[in-house]
Image (cartoon, rainbow, N blue to C red):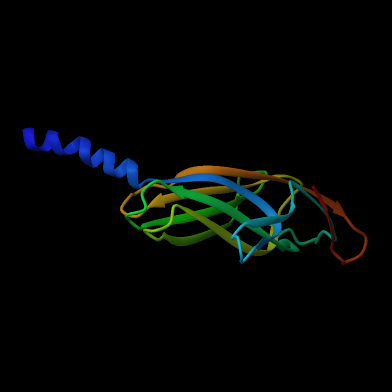
Length: 173
């Protein structure tokens, strides 16, 4: 019993030391990474979309705004002696708390790196109604059971009914 008690603080320290920390997340139109410096430029960061949509009479038809965008996350780990593997889950929720889409990715942060960016490139955003949509960012480290929510990215989508069948969009920064 005494042996177990002696090891426990060391194990807890190791777990905390290997931990990955989420630093920030953002929605933007696109990213550019400078090859010389590895610095990232976030192009057209947005919080709101306006879409003119011809609403279908059949409510079972799913609508989507044809729009390319990215969800960018920045991660940090203290320990550079071990690689860390994390499962990332990003879920898009509509204003009524309905899950519209879930994206998953497994990312390995190599042992010699302290920082890692993940960029999820997405084409199209499903819509159900006007209101605040949310991208929920969660992650879990390998060998853990539950995801930890680390970010919630709100985006207001304003749907304006249009007369014709064309879809147009306007981005507000």
